[in-house]
Length: 182
Image 1 (cartoon, rainbow, N blue to C red):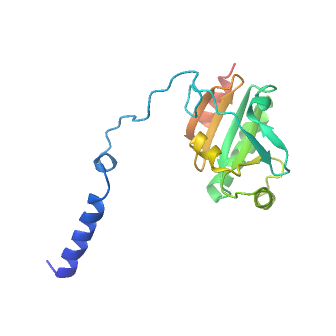
Image 2: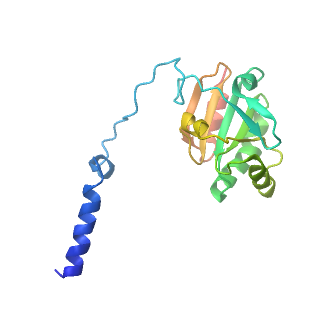
Image 3: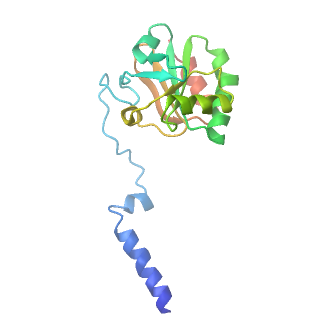
């Protein structure tokens, strides 16, 4: 084996050795290692009470979760970053889900722009001026909801998370969740 090849092999092994407890990453156990959920506790997981928040939309109108829940069956949060995948999901939601659920409040959460003016610009450029876009300008909101691109959260009228960490794929799971609401 050549010196360059041995050096490369040693470098790869050193990198892998630095990955603490990586065995589960390479050979997943299939076990859910998240902590058990205490029903009724505040948190982002299914069965927990959603953390309350107040966020401005792109017109600087504040929206508070607990207030929004007072007049609808549920609130849906879709975490958006203005990429083609998010555009496909949000557009599908807007055309095929939103019209069938007038008693549910839908929000796009722009978690990448970081400011209301930039978010407003992205909203208009992407053609979503008819959708309410909320803008988290502090890091705590995203961390509290443990959300990433495409995460869809459904919070029922009691404030309970009925769906969390579900990527929006084709809308079928979202539709089934909303259909099952009381």
